[in-house]
Structures are given as structure tokens and as C-alpha cells.
Length: 385
Image 1 (spheres, helix red, strand yellow):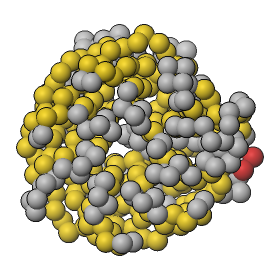
Image 2 (image 1 turned 90 degrees about the vertical axis):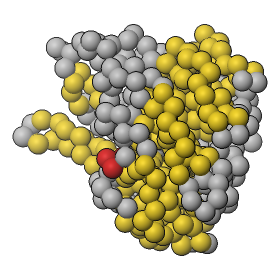
Image 3 (image 1 turned 135 degrees about the horizontal axis):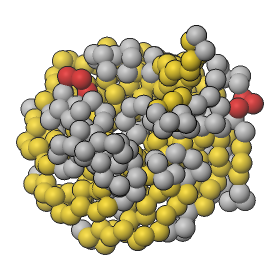
Image 4 (image 1 turned 45 degrees about the vertical axis):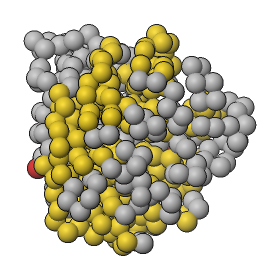
């Protein structure tokens, strides 16, 4: 278990000889704590086997591993508990859950740590570990990269982090509500949007320099918003609304489209997608979004089980959002992200321990059939610049 920043011995690096200036990067969190017993029932594995893997996407259909760091991360929560700064110099990883033993039985318990990775080092390495609120989950950098926000799910707060090189300090917290799961800045840097998952709402935060405040402005969504992205022009936001508290139930769910343009942000559409979307992404070109549906692929005994999950591609024309196509991917898909140039879409298949690589040509998206081994069970991922 990672106790404090001095526990550097757990940050063992395994790296290939990739140049330090290679780019772009994709960061992936592999969570090895969930497991199964001899009868196939859910169980908890000992801690110490999670990894954070950094890939170089210079060859997009054959990414290379830059580094693999033994750092705890978690599948509990939305698949966005890590991020790379806008200038690519550091990465943050929220250590949401760890393992504790009680009466000889292992169980998952919240922790309060965020790891800081020096992306300029060759290979990237752990720079420090800081304490934040309880169960840090979805996090994001500000557009300038001088601030980050992290949703402390068990505390019901958003932590405000100051970024100064690889030195990261918490400068404040904003009280939101219990269960806040993810927070993201708008690209213009003037606001941030925090998901009040149990309340089926998005909280709108005001950002003024290094000050972040919540004026109790909420936007309703479809049940249980669990991931959120904002369009490159800051005019629209999209939430992946899981519908069932973080798991499949056999019913179609939705992506809520939020109009951020003007003085009164509001939900303008609920677009039907598949069962239990968690992964969510928007193309840097702003013309496509994608929702990643679990589709019961992790529940073999359920009547709604499917062998694989799927991606629902959404076309964006102005403020009109429509489903374009649905593409089958792997088993129990969780994280997803477009490449920085918008030409590829990577989907993490947790149970298959790999990534599906999808090619984007205009508004047409196709599964290349190529798979990228993740080095573990991919629970979260984000793209660098």
C-alpha cells in the first residue's frame, strides 16, 4: 500500500529506449486489485500489482511503451482518474481505492493520494505523492496547466491543486455534495463542471484566477452522470449517464447534451446510447463524440450479458447531436480517448487486458481489428497534448 511520497521503492520503472521528446503520449492505469475466487465470485487481490503505463503514439497503430510505473490506481469510479498536463510536462494519477484486511478478509477502502509523474524525465518517473481528500477520482488540468481539480468522491469535495513544475500542492477545496465523481475545465478556463452522480446533476463552478467557487448552479442530466467532456469551443458539454450507479442493467442509457453558450447553461438533449456508458470522448476536431457502453459484458450470468461492449459514435453539427453508428469492441470496455490529431480512437478493454484501435476518417469510424496490449487491466486512460 502506498503510504506517502517517500514510498518511492514502489515506483519501479520498466522502460524501453524511447526518446524523451517522442510524442504524443497516452497514459493508462491498470488496476489489478479486483479479482475472482476459485468459484468465479468477486474477490479482492493483494495490493502492489497496479501499474501506470505510458505509451508513445508516434506510430498510432503500433504504440510503444515508454514506461511502466508500479503505482496504485482504481477501476472504482469513472475511467478518468489520471491526466497529462497541457504542456506534457507532468501527469497526475488519483489513487482512489486501496486494499485493507479486516478479520482476515481483504476489502477495498478509500485512500487520499494523488501521484505526480515527471513526464520530462527519461523515462518518466514518480516525482511526489500528495494527500488530498478521501477517494480522489476524476481529475483534470486547467487549460493553462497551472491548476488541476480532483473530485474527492467520499468527501463530496473538489480539491484545488496548484501546479508549479513537478511541485503540486493543494490550495483549497470546494464543497459540492457526496458522490461527486469527476470534474473538468471548460477550454476557455472560465468554468469547471463537476458531476454530482447520485443527484443526477452537473454542478457549474466559476474559475477566477486561482479561485474556484460553486454558486449552486446545477444542470439536470439523465440518471447517474459518470463522465463528462467539453467541446473544443466551450459551447457544448456531454455527460455519459450510466443509469444504474456504475453497472449494467440491460437498459439503454443516454448522453446528455448541455448547451454552455450564453448566460444560462442548460440540457438540450438526451441522446440514447447503449447500456452503462462510462468511457466518453470528444474529437479535438469537435465533429464527433463517442460513448463507450459496457453492455453487460462483465456479467456472464445476467440475462442482458453480451460477449463484448460497444462504442456509440455521435455526430455533432452545431448544437445538434445524433447517433451515427455503433461499433463492437472488447470485453468490459472502460476508458476511451481520441488521439490528439483526432485520427484514431483508443478503447480500453478491461477484461481482455488490451485496447481496440479504431480509425477515424472524417465522420466515419472503423475498427482496425488491431489490439494493443495494455500490460494489465486498463481501468482509466487520458491523452497528452
